[in-house]
Length: 242
Image 1: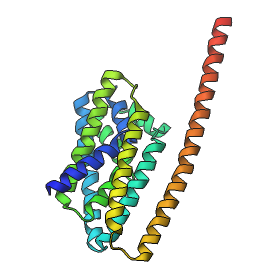
Image 2 (image 1 turned 45 degrees about the vertical axis):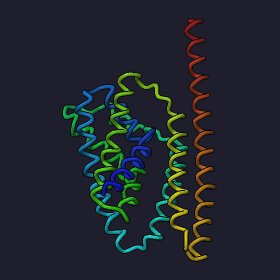
Image 3 (image 1 turned 135 degrees about the vertical axis):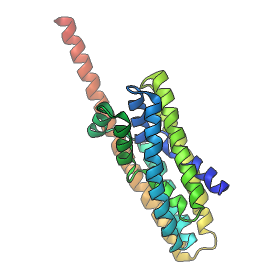
């Protein structure tokens, strides 16, 4: 249990660095009391990760450990590429963070439950629970996510919106790639030729597709930043001439 707890804490803490829900935590903390936001995050995380652990634990019972370890490694590779791509708050999520209404606790809790459904932290928890102690994974993943979001709340309140996001993303991605290599090597030791070749093909495919998506996203953001810069210059020029 202790090993599952420690591993789950480390993986989920890293997964949450620079993640969408961490950005949401920072946004909420800029407007509302930190302890209400953190309590709501704890409640939402406990519920979502309980469902994730339940699903992963019983899924793992019917699938060979070798395949689950390889699947876990491929998942970590995806998470690393996902982290390099970066997360953004879309308009709907940003508006939820800005219009909490009367019941801040319920608003924050519901926003985080919706944000976590299908997110990489939920998928990572499912993968971890397939062949490890479910209670340790549940506790470790919950504490890991809450700790990362608490860090975002603290930094957000102290520094506002200015986070060294790229540095955090690069470090988190590097750790995910280490986890991916570790799990893939562990799963491929003694595997059949078919499994080995299939895994290598999957790694190449994921890497190529992920690289293309990352490049496209970075180009779009560069173009958007350039447009914003031109708009700012235009407004400044009109103000001076006005």
